[in-house]
Structure formats: structure tokens, C-alpha cells
Image 1 (cartoon, rainbow, N blue to C red):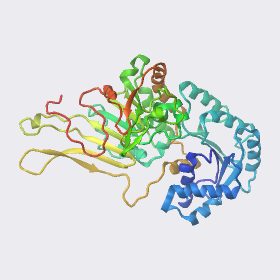
Image 2: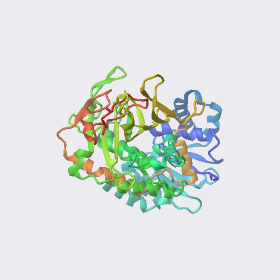
Image 3: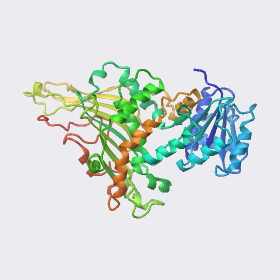
Image 4: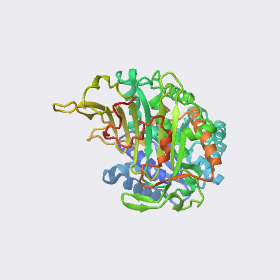
Length: 502
């Protein structure tokens, strides 16, 4: 598919997301000859910079991110695409002068992609201003708007935001970004499931015992206290990233990889999730907050000692959720999702546990137990795909051990591709497969809203867990069976099941 030249207009271009992700991703796209000739990157910022200063700052951002992979000659070529527009997005003059700048057709392509890397409270006013100065008019080129998460604070605010955006843009112009969908390992879930016919017959309730999806972080909230205390782990990670991975594991095969077919199947999964009432929240969800502890041997503060956190805050830094998908494929199979900060290890993984094998064949042997099979998909930092199987140990006795079949996503000599590279290029291509349609956002909020409402009512107490642990012991109550427990390693684990397992 040919990529047309485009002007990428970045609001929030001097912020952390731009420094850590967006500018390095655009640089790598350009270095790999993926940006079409003539494309421009226009940064909007309040700081009193000129073009030279902005290009110097961009170089610092990219060099700090890439380290030894930074190439000065490649940056010099990329820097010719970079332009700076000084303005305050709360001031109408910022947009009137922006409109005049973008009319310079000899310098800026008329295909415009507006990237809103700003606070959700600023989305509406910025969209209003862009429309006022006719920057959404598609007279001479297409218009696309990229919206960073979170898309709303709850179901009601998401609907309000959608109505506001819908005044000016149709659904085909809106790119709601969840960068997890740009990760190659996440996309590999689709290939793993649908390009291997051996898996489809067993990818259902007849063979799978339960599914776990984990995103754990060692870091705390850092300087994000003011934002994080109003959001919490459920909104920040589980409602978006983890529910997206959940849909890819549970979805039916789409007709094709075309955007609408893919997103249709994801929405069907979210619609099929058994509703969680406010009365049943405690049996389906658990929250907790990190206390003081040690990370890599260093003593760290608890959440309540972090900057800008109220002393009586009950905002969760750990959230766990149990879901059931009430359709033919998954009826009765629990999906366990968890995320947390200040946990023992930084890791994102999907762990699929198959049912325990029948033991009648081995009844008269010395074998004490058999582990179930697992499919393990490491998302980050370890990118892997493993299938665990039980095999016999060499020797005269009937002893077994766990062996892993490895199908790693990336070979040692293959470089990683950042998720934002893929997604930024997809915006230029007009490919919305890896972006969220509004009904995906809506049904994700429908799942977690009753939980958030119940937690908002319970302001007197929240469980805690020591920093550096794997979270609160109390969340074990979510498991359906004694034999089920959180899997925190991508390496083979010792047998946990007795021979009399039922």
C-alpha cells in the first residue's frame, strides 16, 4: 500500500510520551525509509523555542532513547522534517496561526494527522478550536485524529467525549490508540492462534482450565501522583491494555485481517462477558495498595508516602479481576487479569493453563503427580512463546520432568520494533486494525464500571502489600479451585498437583 505524504501535528510534543516514544519512533521510521518523501512533523508547544532549538531538543530526546543505535547522519536527514509552532492550546491565537502555517502548501502536505498527546480534559477544547479554524475540512487531503488513552474516566464520560468528537469527525477519522496492540508479541497472538491449525481444536472450554493475563511493574508512580490518584490501576492498565489482550486470546477467528472484521470479533467477546453486579464485585475483583518494602534490595516508600498523594487515599495500585465469557467456546472458563506497581518483577505475560491429564494410565507407577500443559506468551521484557509438556526422565524409573517447546517471537540477531513505530505508520496508511473502535471502549467500560462504583463507595479500607512482593495474599479468593494460583514465571514450575487431583 502506497503511503501518501502527511503532516503530523503533535499536541504535547514536549511531554514525556513524545520524549520517550513518539520522536524516537518517527526517527526510526525515517531511518528505515518508511516515511514518505515530503512528510513533516509539526510540534505544538508553549516554550519559546525556534526551529533550531526544537531540532536540538528532538536530537537529545532521540539520542537518550536510542543510545549506541543513534546515527547522527540519519538524524540530520530526519531533522529536516521537524518544525515547531509556538502556542498555548488554551489561546485561540495558537490555532489561528496554526491554520495559517498549514496553508503553506509548498512546505506542509495537506494530509493532516493530529496527535493529541494531552490530558483528556483538553481533548474537547482542542477539537473545538481545530474545527473553528476549519482544520478538519477535507478539501485538499484527509484528516485523522489520534487520541491517547484514557478515553474517558468511566462509561458516562467516555460517551460524552465520543459525542463531542462525533460533532466534527466520523469513526473512520478517529484513531484511539492503545500502544499494547502495536507490540509485535501481542500481534503474534493472532498468528499463533489462527495460523496453526493444531491449536484451534483445543482452544476452548473442553481443554483449557483457566487463563491468566498479568502486567506487573517494579516502578512506583514516580511524579505522576496527581494523575494516578485520580485514576488507579483499574483505569490505568486493566480497562485498556489487559482487556485488549483478553479479547485477542478469547475472540473467534475473524473473516479476514481487515480492520472491521477484527474489531467485530473483539467486541463480541466484550459483549459476552458475564456482567458483574455491584453486589458481586468482591467475588470478581480485588484491589490493594503498595506499602513500604524493598525493590532489588533498596528500601522504597509506600504509596501513601509518594509525592502528591493524600494521606487517606484508597486508590488501588494493584487490581485483579475474574471474568467469564458466556459463549459456547469459553463457558465456565475463568480469565484472571491482574496488574500492579511495585511488584517483584516487571513482566507482561499471558499464561494459558490446560486441564489436568487423566491419571488412570499411570496409577500403578511411582509417579506422584503430573503438571498440566501451559502455553506461555511473554509480551515484555521477555518476548517468547513456550508450550510446556511433561516428558519422562532418562533412567529405569518412571519419573517425569517439564520440557518447553520454544517458538520465540524474535531471533537474537533481530532488532525489536517499538509499538509506536507500527501504530504511527498505520495512521499514515489509514489502517485502523490495531486501533480501538468506540464500541470496544464502551463495552470495556461496561465491564469495569460496577467495580469502580463499588470501590468508590468503600472509602474506609484498602488492603496493602509490601513493595517487592507479588501482591496481596487476599486476592487468592478470586480463584475457582484450590489447584489454581497465580503464575509469575515463564520458566518451568515444579509440580503443584497431587495424583488424586479431581
